[in-house]
Image 1 (tube, helix red, strand yellow):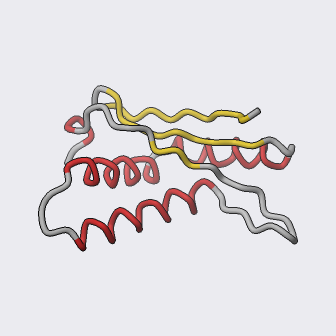
Image 2 (tube, rainbow, N blue to C red):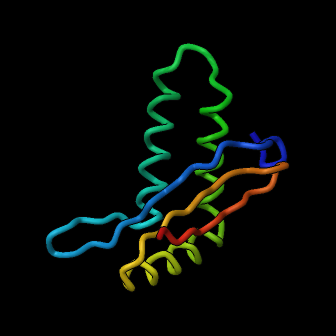
Length: 105
């Protein structure tokens, strides 16, 4: 499936966490890769075709390949180091990827 075939998708929300000696965290890239692996396993188990799952998989692949993923990873880690909670939403809207970093209150 090409990027221009991906229409509007439900956002995928990733919530990275800061690692300390007591609490293990996960960076944005690790979370996206974990989600991608979960999608791949589901796709391999399936008998039929789940268009939503395929779109989710393609959205995650597109995000991991994009230059924006590195920028969002750096920005989220900076906010996490300041003690803020962060989430990143990724989705396709009208065939174009959208990435949104949110600071949680």
